[in-house]
Image (cartoon, rainbow, N blue to C red; front, side, top):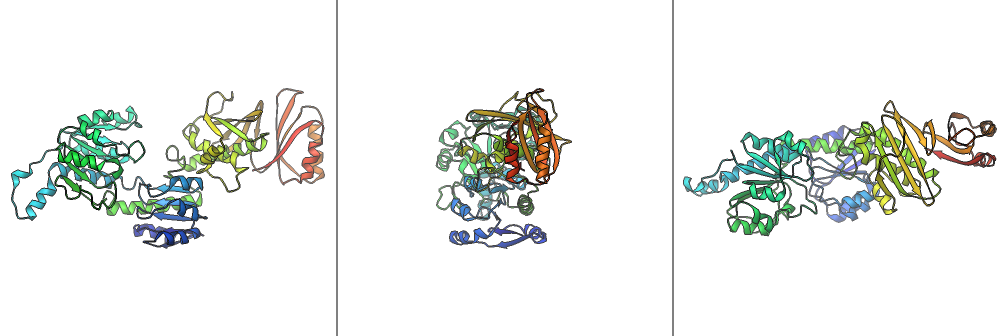
Length: 527
C-alpha cells in the first residue's frame, strides 16, 4: 500500500482518482509548518504539492521512504531537485495541463494593455467619462516578440496569429524547422528587443534567463513597447522595469508573476502603467482539473513503475513513451551489471553507441540505465535511473557517446566499452522482436546469450573435453544447465561461454570449475 501526502489544495477530481486506487492511502494536510512536515514526511512514499509547500534538502532528507514528488503545476523552483536526485527520488510535474489557460491569460493581458482597459474601467467606476483619454492600439499588424518558444509560447503564437500579428521568437533550443511549422521568424534576443511592439515571456527560470529583461534589455526596446509576463517573476529586473515605465520606454507592463510573491511593498503595485494579476495563469476550472488528474496519475504510475511521464530529473522527457523504452533500458542496465562483474577493477570510463529505431532516440535514458547497472554492484544505498548519472559523476566515471564501437549489423544495437585500470571490454546487446534481450558480442567473441537468471561466464582454452568436464562438475552438484551459449576467437584459441543455470550453484562448484586447467576465469552473475 502506497502512502501519499498532499500538502496543497488540488482539484477534487485528483482526490477521487486516489480514492479509487486500491493500492493507495492518502492524507491531505494543508498549511503545514516546516517542523510538522519534517515530522510527517518519513511515513510517505510520495508527496504532492503546488507552489505553497517548499521541499528543501532537509525535508527531502527526512523523507526516508520518499520515492516520488509530484508538483501540481509546471514550476519546480520550490523543490530542491539536486537533493531529490541524489536520493533517487523522482520529481514529476504537469507542464502541459495549464498550456491553454496560460496562453489565453497572456492574450487577455495583451488586449487589456493594448486597449487600456484597466485604467478605463477605474475611471468609469470613479464617475468619469473620458473616452478620448483611453485611446488604445490594435494587435492587428503589430509585431509580437515571444521569448521562449515552448508549449505556451507556441499556443500564444497561434492565438496572436488570429489577430494577424507578425510573430518573432527567441529560443536558442528551437530549430528552424519548428519555426517554419508555426509560421514565425527566429531571431536573436537583441533583434527581438529592437523590433517587437509587444514582448511576452514564456521561458523557464535558469541561470541564463534570470532577469533576462534588465536595464540593458529595456534600453534596446522600442519606445512605447508593451511587456507581458505570465511565466516567472525571476525573468524581469523589476527595478529596471520601473525605471523604463517612468521614462516612457515601456508604455505598459502586464504582470501575472513577480520576483517575490506576494509582491508586498513593490513600487510596481499601483503604478498607473502596470496591469496586475495575482498569479492567475493556470487559474481556470479546466486547468486545475487537468493538473490534478495528470499529476495524480503520473505519481501513481511512477510509484508502480509503469511510466515516468514528465519526470524532470529523469531522462524520459522526450522520445518514445516509457513502455516502448523499457525493454531497451532493461537491456542496457543488464549490460552494465555484466560489465561491472566481469571487469578486473573498478570501471573508470564508459563509451556508448546506440543505433536503430527507436533506440537512437533513447541515448540519454539508455546511458542512465547502463550507469545504474554498473554502479549497483557497489552502491549500498540503492541506485536508480534518477541518481545513477549523479552517483557516476561522484565516482568519477566518465561516459561519452561514440561511433564505430563494433562491426555488427542489427536493427537495434546497444554497444558499450568500459575501461578500468589496465583493461577494457566491449559488449553489445540487441532486442529480438523488440522485447527479447540478447548479448551478441563480448570483446572479440560473438554469441547470442540470454542475459537472465543465474549465469556462469567462463573463459577457457578452446580444447576438447572442457564442456564435458563442466557438465560433469555441475551434474555432481545437481545443478542443471538451462542454456549454453559459446563464442570463439578462433578454433583452438579461447572460448567465452554464457551458461544459464536453473539454480544457484554452491561456491564449491565455482572452486571446482576454477581448478580445471583449461578454464582461465569463471564468474557467477545473478541478474
